[in-house]
Length: 237
Image 1 (cartoon, helix red, strand yellow):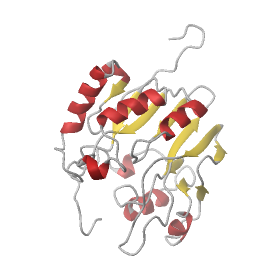
Image 2: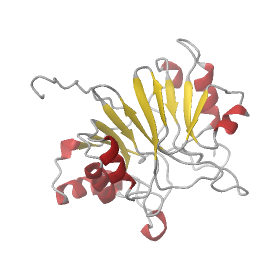
Image 3: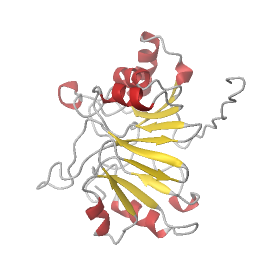
């Protein structure tokens, strides 16, 4: 929460105004570190190139309407929506929602799948480990790229239901049949008990233990960019 913290440890790597036009935004759930009022308003105000569409889990459309934002598509798990030659699918994840002391699970939470003709992307959101990874992988995999959380996992007796740890992130990578995964949800806020720089270290150990090459699951520096070259269907590169 902007008025109560916790504060970001690392500032945003790029100013929002310097981003290109954003065609659509995927919202995973309603927690304050994942749904910020000021950021949503600023994204909505950037109208160059057309209005940005927000895709949200069930119940959140009303929240956006109260901000005067109506270009919102609300979806239940396994709902699909076609946009710009792609299919967007709201998929399950194991989490919860809350934006005030008086409401809990008022809005649904979701991970997201983007399906193009030649590229499949999975966004994991915030989630505990459950069979939903394997089910999503069976329905829509293999994925060319997945964004998977690796941080905010201690103490396990409490956090295991809400956030995967690096070992579980590697298992999720395998369940999804992801060709390449990128780590997210670490190193920005002090939310839990583990040291802020521990998740990448634990991820490296988990990859080694499960026999996965390190270049299949990348940890990027804040603001780092990678370029993925499209596979050549003729030679399989």
